[in-house]
Structure formats: C-alpha cells, structure tokens
Image (cartoon, rainbow, N blue to C red; front, side, top):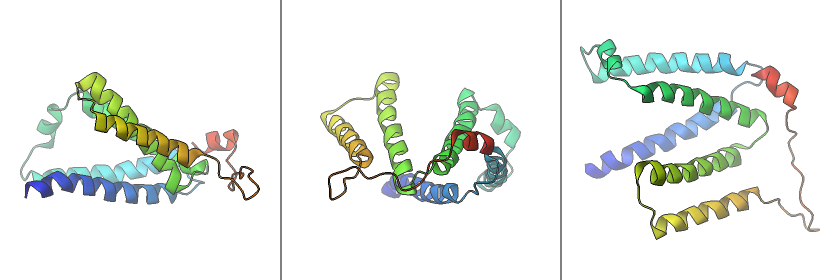
Length: 169
C-alpha cells in the first residue's frame, strides 16, 4: 500500500500533464489566451470546490482558506505563467514532442539547483550524472538535423510573427 501512495502522485502527474499538453495544443489560435485561461480556471475552481467538499464533508472552505500562506498566492501566479507559456509555445510552432520536453528538462535542472541551494538537498554523484544526461539530451534534441548532403535541415513550420503573437495574447 505504501508503494501505491508513493507512486500514485507520479502517475497522476504524468496522466495530467499528458492531457494538459494535448489540450494546450488544441487551444484555438484565434481565442485570446487570457479568455481561454479564464474558462480553464473557472472549470478548475468548480472542480476544486467540489473536491474540497467531497474529501472534507461538512468542512468550511473559508476556514481552510484562512490557513493558506504566501505559497498559495504565488502558486496562482505561477499557474498563470505556466499555462500562458504553454499556449504561446504551441502558437510559436513548437511540436508537442519537443517543446514541453525541453521546458520540462529545463525546469528539472532548475529544481535541482533550487533543491540544493535553498533546501539543503544533497548533490550526489548519481544526481550529477543525471544532470549531465539531461544536458546532453537538451543538446541532442536541439541539434540541427543533417540532410544526406550534410547540410542542416530548415524548420518545416513557420514561426508566428511577433506582432501576431502580441495580438493573440
């Protein structure tokens, strides 16, 4: 049972992030990003309130709010930034298979730095090897593909202009 409690959050994260990226890629290009996010957060708010009362029958959500600290507010800001970046990432022409991979590797590397520097987590040889593998992976996925003639292949999808991106925000 302990293993299920340990692994279940990881599986939920992988499942949620997979659907999250599919939905992010499926966001219509002609909708204002903030209008789309407002709808998403409205659904999320309804779901969170419902889950609060399902998991805490008879609970007082306002009493629970009173226990929050700065982290709840900062998480709200971060959620907006992360969700906006996903929409803009796909509108800029990134593939689902590469854009989020690079972003998640970058986030993972920054998490190691923060964990060691701010929370006193240990840096082991195996973690250092893992970081090196991530850095090599970033190089590999970003390296230009070579054509049979040895020339770098050009991007296949056009990147949206800066003016177009600003108007779609």
